[in-house]
Image (cartoon, rainbow, N blue to C red; front, side, top):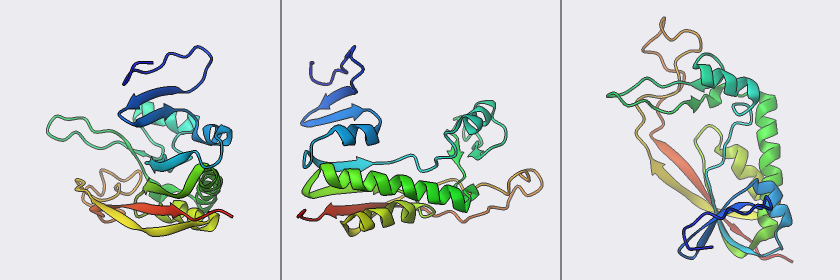
Length: 190
C-alpha cells in the first residue's frame, strides 16, 4: 500500500491509511482490540460517539427528517448550515448506565493492547465525561489530568424540547465554552 493511500482489501479487513509514522484504522474498535496482541499500541486518541441512543435506527430516521428525537438541528448561521448535535440532557439513567457499560468494556480492551506507560486522550464534554473517565480509572488507568479545549458555541444547550418557538431565548444548560479531554496513562502490568 502506498503511503497516505487507503487500502482496498477485499478480505473485509479494516480500511487503513498511513500518515507519516501513524496508521489510521477504520474498524469497530471493540472487535479490533480483541484481535490485537497485548502491549501492541502506544497511544489512543479518541472522540467517541457518546450517545448510544442517537445512533439507533429510530433516532437516525428522526435526524434525517429534521424533526423530533434527541438531535438538535442548529439554525443556519451566516448562510452556513451547521451539523446536528445530540442532546445529552435527554439521556435517561438507563442510557447513562449503558454508556458506562460500553466504556467499561472499552477501557479493559484498551488496557490490554496498550503498552505500559501508554497514553490515552479522550475527548468529552462536561455532561458525559464522568461516564468515560470512571471506567478508565476502574480498569487500572491513572488519570493524569485534563486538557481543556476552549470552544465558542453560539449558545448553550438546546431550548426546551418542543417549546422552541414559545421560549426562543431560554436554554436548558449554560454555554460551557470548554471541553475536557481526559489524559490517562496505563500503569505497569503485572
